Amino acid sequence: MPSTIRVRAVAKDDTVEVQSLIQHPMDSGFIKDAKGEFIPAHHIEVVTFEHAGKVVFTAFWGPAVSKDPYVKFSFKGAKKGDLLKISWVDNFGEKDSLEANIL
Amino acid sequence: MSQETKGASGDKSVERRQVLKSLGLAGIAGLGFAGGFSLPALAADAPGWPQEAFKEKSEADALKALYGKTAEVSDKITLDLPEIAENGAVVPVSLATSLPDVTSLSILVPENPFTIAASYKIAEGTLPAVSCRIKMAKTSKVVAIVESAGKLYSTSKEVKVTLGGCGG
Image 1 (cartoon, rainbow over the protein chains, first blue to last red):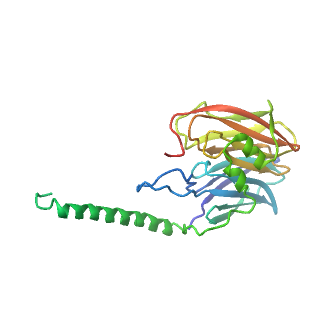
Image 2 (cartoon, chains in turn green, blue):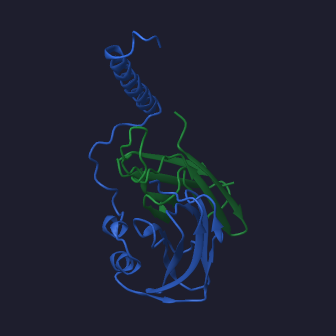
Image 3 (cartoon, rainbow over the protein chains, first blue to last red):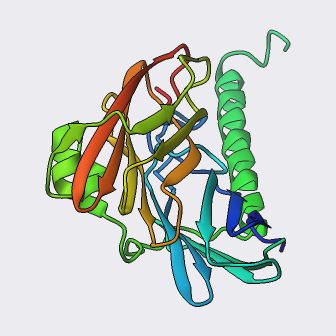
């Protein structure tokens, strides 16, 4: 199964810009299905971005983050070819992670 | 449908429709399984996720639960949002600040069912800026919170929402 995570991390000068897109329904718990029953809230709670064993960025998300969430940030101290590890876990305990090379 | 099938058998066809409908839903659920999603076991929340704070329904309570302090307005925060969001399900937000020693950035939508939309932990060496996409139930101000050198700062911007993004 392909990863739910897509990431693009590009080093420029001393800064790495990270853009990531995660495939996830991010159900808010306020939307009804075809039978008129509420679809239970199902959303990512924590996403961590790690470089060289150090967490550089952590996202805490609630049900108000859009479906297939996108996030962009930048950090210093990494170079082209380094690995960036992205991991997420949701409120059902589902999780995924991915390691990607910094371009 | 002929005249004869009406009446008793008419009810049956309603039943049949119901059964087909639920079968259809089961099919969709089956696809979910194939896609690698499992049924929700009663899982504990992810470690570190500020569960209580994400339940809060007002700006003041949310800040208290998340940071244990109040914020003062700052002009050193830039908050980029559309003035009008036609689709409340996807509202792009960008937040950045020139304040020093930033450890946390948060995005709050006071008119949403739960106030906190997202909160980010900024490590040393990570720039105090983030872009993401949030849902908005209706027209609301959006509040950006920055934790800088242990203090909280905020700025806010009103977004008109044409079509709410939380259902209902």
